[in-house]
Image (cartoon, rainbow, N blue to C red; front, side, top):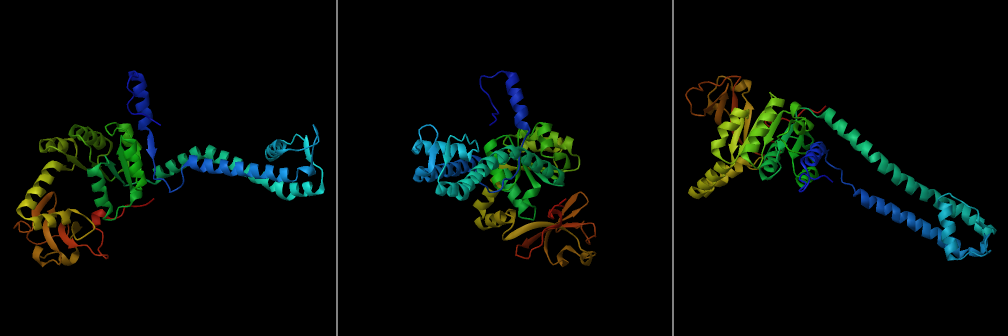
Length: 368
């Protein structure tokens, strides 16, 4: 429907097309048939009604009178069925026998009503589809608060949001932004809302309600794009948690300077996991299990409960690997930890069971 690139067109045409594309918001679709297929089915039913009516008239053609020649053949039957079902009614062919009039009352008239319902219903549905979609979009915008925006729905973005959703985030609270129509179609098919457009543009991010988002995941294909998106997102939302992925480790400091709270170097992380798996395949399997949320062992962050205040790290029931105190992350064996404080947060390793509670900072988002 829209084209992001128009080879051979002038700059004005490309700019106009880009403005149209960036306004496109797609919500998750309910599992219904394609509109063209629905229309085709209704047209087919209408044609069957027309053919059935014509055959009924033809089988009882002796009970009808044609003002032109007095007889009713197959063509006259279709003509009569057409003008009758469409309520045109020229009156040139009329039922004259009692049987034909009885058939018109109890058969032709219900078929006429059915024919009109099919045509009028299809027309009304086509006319109201746009209004219904606009109403649904406005309702979605009004209810959207404290949500998660995912920039880029490739392998990284898809895996990231699957991990977050495994901790309790609902799909209704996720908005995917990507310039590729097919990618957004895949995202909406999975149950996420999608915005088609270039995420480096502020108007595209505004369409995704970034200014009201709670957390933003940036998983673009290029590092320079990630920098621009981070700058734009941070300008629109000063309080959101922004996590970005880069390919090259040398670009990580630039992302942090641009406003990212955390930066993951995808190439280095994959390389370290490969190296660990070479040295110890079992250790590699454990690490893979830890970073895959929702199964086996999970790393979760939780606050210190009152019963743990004043205790040492080893005295807690959970396996604590780090303590978050203020803006510092202290290892479990760091002497600076001393006794646990009520304001501390613990990073622990837990085994996932059907009764495992969602981590506090991954709690389900508020629904309006």
